Image (cartoon, rainbow, N blue to C red; front, side, top):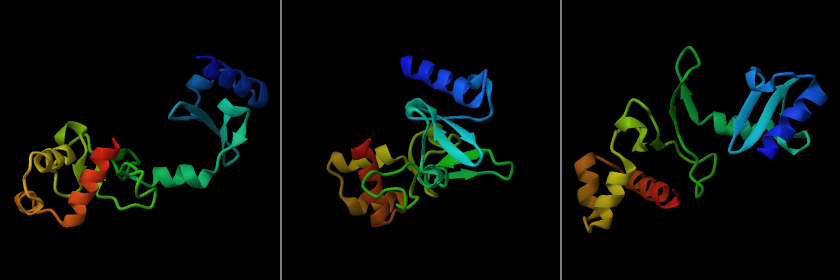
Length: 146
C-alpha cells in the first residue's frame, strides 16, 4: 500500500495528475504502476524511471485483439522461451473457461501433462488430440513453469 501511495504522490507532484486512479494514463503490471506521458512509459512506483517501452510492447504483442481493439486471447510468456517464443499456449476466456490450452486445438495443457504423468505414451496423447511433438513440449514447459 505504501508503494501505491508513493506512486500517487509522485504522479500528483511531477505530472499534476490529481486523480491518477481514474486517469486513462494509468497502466499497471505485476505490482508496478506506470503512466504514459509524451509517448513514454514511466514507472511512477520507482521515482519516475523510464521503462523500456519495447519490453512492454513485446508483452502487448502477445495479446490477440478484435477489430475494436479489445483483447481476445493471451499467449503467456514461457520463461524458457522468452518474449519471442512461439504462440502455442493460449488463454482464451471463450475456451475451457479461460484455462491454458493449445492454440487451435482447444485441449488444456493440464490435461496433456496429467495424461503423461499418469504414464500414457506421448504418441497416444498426441494422436488423441492431433498434437505435434512441439505442442506437447510447450504444454509440459508451460505447466512445469506455472
